[in-house]
Image (cartoon, rainbow, N blue to C red; front, side, top):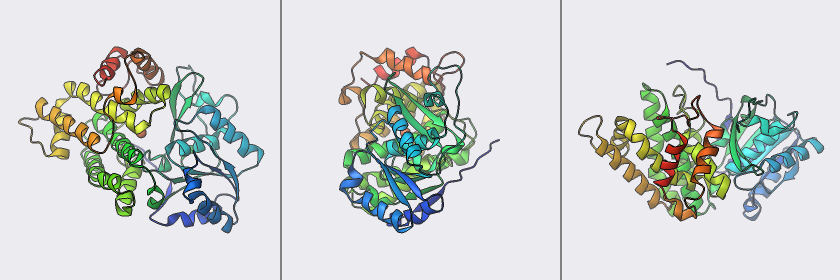
Amino acid sequence: MKFTFQNPVQIIFGAGTLDRLGEAVRAHGTKALVVTGGGSVKRNGTFDRAVASLNAAGVSVVECSGVEPNPRLSTVVRGADLARRKACDVVVALGGGSTMDAAKVMAAVVFFEGDPWEMFPHGQANRRLPDRALPIVTVPTLAATGSEMNAGAVITNEKTTIKSFVTAGCLYPKVAVVDPELTASVPKDQTAYGVCDLITHVTESYFNGVDGTPLQDRIVEGIILTAMEWGPKAVADGNDIEARAQVQWASVVALNGWAQVGTFGPYPVHMIEHTLSAHHDIAHGAGLAIVNPAWMRVAARTRPARFAQFAQRIFGITPKHPDDAEAASEGIDRFEAFLRSIGCPTRLSEVGIGEELLDKFAEDTVLVAHDEEGRLPGRPALTPSEIVEVLRSAL
Ligand SMILES: [Fe+2]
């Protein structure tokens, strides 16, 4: 094993920690661009509490509201312009994954010369990564994306309907204030989608990473088992703060790098899902619940032993031999049944997607991520027609 790893994000975790936001931000600036989404943080009082904590610490607030789900490039540009005009010196993201991703990229666009879409792979010859950003502080109000403690962001270019990603060192937040109480008002469906998202973050590296990573395997399995134990409790009773805390910690650890370090796995399921939510504006976690089991069934054909291990360690299914395709398949069925049991869709028809655009989805997917032969990276690498096959099996 050979790798270099660093995650510099300070995390302040626990019920009630929102009150420490002001002190956390004050260490990095005195005028904060506070980025929010559709208004739930206003309705449930979180925004007012955050502003009170900031003001008490001597931090003034410039508000940037209205980040949409599947955040758009134009919204990012609008926020960056506002931060520049008002001379903000720190960016606070108060919301779910969309809000955090948009806020992180806003912080970089403030200093980025030229077209910010050049940060994102979309088939262009030259990609320019940002190397500087305003300090970022994240306050997630949803347990799902893990964006609060990593250097990635996913943005949709609404003009081209391409949803792409950027990962750059300057996008690491300085601090993540993670208060599970803020997730208590998240509705059942979004809670379930968050559980699916966090599980998919670790199944990607588990199934697509390099061989010989036994500790990473166990970390991933621990995250999945924890999410499967506490996720249904959080869905059943949103006010169960212990369940909310366990799910949220799992969501942080699922994508802060600890589970993936040394595995070097690509994210084929995410890449395919992004094209669905770019075209249809469905919830990311709902799209993953549809794509992941369908992708697993195709991938298991080439690597049954890996999926048999998943079946054994997650669902207690004993394979008859290491390559037991039947055990592998049973594990995938059980996983899909779990997703259904918490309220996730597992078929494209459930979210109103038919077969019309399957070729377009495949084409857009490999535009954003492809190997030298034009295939979607993963184990196995998939040609566009194989991506269509995955999606067709999920109709
Ligand atoms: Fe995700």
